[in-house]
Every structure is written in structure tokens, then in C-alpha cells.
Amino acid sequence: MEIESTVKGRLVRLTDDDVRSELRNVRPEAARIYVVHVDGVAFPVKQAFAIVTGLSRSDFITDHARRAFERLGFRVSRIDVAGR
Image (tube, rainbow, N blue to C red):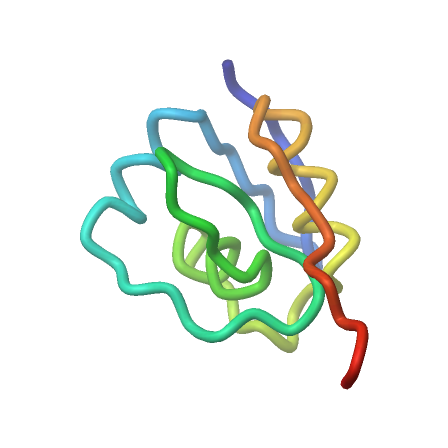
């Protein structure tokens, strides 16, 4: 599956295979609220989207990244933030 999206005037094309390939050897950071599940690993959505697109995290919002991953067929979930 492939998606196209414009972020800060830049056209971004991604496939589910691109995401898997780019994140294959990446260690996930501590997640705050939302994670994307890629091959059994939960990545913070902003970390993952920045890596696979080459964009700075300040160039996009979490919701944009969440929607892109969901359109590619990845599960995005909210982590339990109770007690924070």
C-alpha cells in the first residue's frame, strides 16, 4: 500500500514496506501518548514518522502522523497515561 501526503509544502510518499524497512533496526524512544505498532514493536508516532519521512518533528503534528500510519494499515494506539 502507498500513500501520498503534503507536509509543510513537501510531498511525502510512503509505503508500508518503506516504514518497515526504515524502522527495522531503530530502537524506540519512550512513548508519551500514541504509538504505532510495526512488526511487533511500538514506536512513538512522531519518532517513527520523522524517521521514515526525514522531516523534523516540529514540521508535523501527531495527528498527521497517526492518520498516515493508519492509512498504511498500521495499528496506532493510545498508551495508558493514567497516573501521569
